[in-house]
Length: 218
DNA sequence: GCGACAG
DNA sequence: ATCTTGTCGC
Image (cartoon, protein in one colour):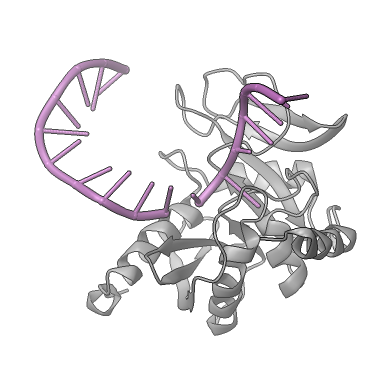
């Protein structure tokens, strides 16, 4: 597969991202995650209040899988379904968390950047693993963090979301700063490694794939 | 050339 | 991501 075309699309994305603190008070946060099977990508976005994590809305959407998983090109696999589900939301969040990198990407075009630019909303990337960059291990204490660097630039945060557990990799996607990204993500962490919006979205996306959403009662 | 490599 | 049950540990 010739990736030149997609690399250009990523350059277009990275040239449009805005990394700055333009947000006012964040009261409503959302998480987007995808589940897969041989044919479809099932996306789910869960919207919740940041103060008590109560779910106030959620949306689902599925799309045919049209792109293979290739490191640094994840957005072309999940973007469509996520955007489709976002349009179905009745309640739009102040910011959207995506399961993957933001600017912590070789071309500053992670999934969160692509989704943020496309929807023109603030987004952050929350990944369970590093894609690129170097960092010093944060302390084993919950809340401890260090910075992720790439080509001499500070591109993300390595956050110990849970004591003694592997840290998560957080980075801005669009319309938010690095510091604000950390502040907001920290607020959404409970007793698990993954921030609540994404943790719930992950569970829902999986139920959706299994066709068990109709049995749910919210 | 070798190793790394989101989900 | 997905294939998969029980099990060791705080």
